[in-house]
Image 1 (cartoon, rainbow, N blue to C red):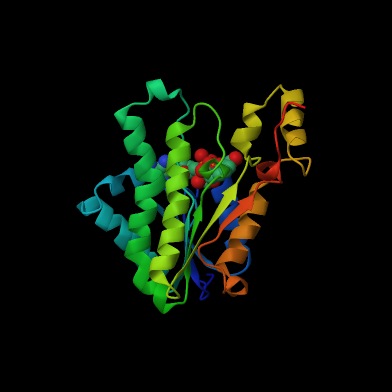
Image 2: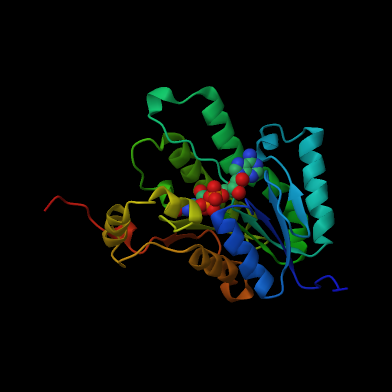
Length: 248
Ligand SMILES: NC(=O)c1ccc[n+]([C@@H]2O[C@H](COP(=O)([O-])OP(=O)(O)OC[C@H]3O[C@@H](n4cnc5c(N)ncnc54)[C@H](O)[C@@H]3O)[C@@H](O)[C@H]2O)c1
C-alpha cells in the first residue's frame, strides 16, 4: 500500500478539463498532495464531484458540504487553491439569456470568490496562495464572447483587489492564457489543418500554447520561488496580446 503524500496540498477546480489534466500531473509530479474537483467524475484518489453553480447561493447546505469535503481532503495542508473551472457560452449578445449569465458568473466568478474566502484561514497559516486561471479575454476578445469575457475581466479584477485587501497574508495571482491546444481545441480544428496553421502563425511565437505550459507557469506561481508575486495577472499568449492587427 502506498502511503499518502505529506507535501503541501493543492485544490484544483475544473480538474477534468484539458488544462486541469495538465495541472494535476504537474503538481503531482513534484510531490504536492492534489485534491481535485469538477462537475465530472474522475478516476483518481481525492477527487470530489461538485457543481460550481452551487455558489450562486454560498449559504446553501450543498455549497457548505462541498467546501467541507474539500477541506477534509486537504488535511490541514492547503497551500494553493487553483481556480481553473470555467463555463463558456458563445453567442451574440442579443441572444444571451439570464441563465447564460447566471451560470457564467457563478462558475467563473462567484465560485472562485467563495472558495477563496472559505480557504483563507488555512492558506494564511500555510503561507499559501490563490491562483485563478483567467484568460486573454480579460482584456482582448472577439464576437460572441460578451458573458465569458466579462466574467474573466471580473475574475482578474477580483485577483488584483484581493491581493491588495489581503496584503502579505495570502498571495493572489492569475494566469491569462491565449488559445491553448487542449484536446477540445484540437478537435475543433479536425480536418482543417490550414485554419489551425493560420491560428498558429497569427501568434508572434509561431504556435499556440500547450496545457503543460500553463501548468508549469501555475506551479511556479504557487511555489516559494514566486514569493514576491501578488496581484499579478500574467500574460501567457505567445505574444498575440502585444501584436497590432493593422490591415497593412
Ligand atoms: N483552452 C484554452 O484555450 C484557454 C485559454 C484561456 C483560458 N482558459 C481557461 O483555462 C481554464 C481551463 O480551460 P480548459 O480549456 O481546460 O477547459 P475545459 O472545458 O476542458 O475545462 C473546464 C472544466 O471546468 C469544469 N466545469 C464547467 N462547469 C462546471 C461546474 N458548473 N462545476 C464544476 N466544474 C465545472 C468542466 O467540467 C471542465 O472539466 C478555464 O478557466 C478557461 O477559461 C482556457
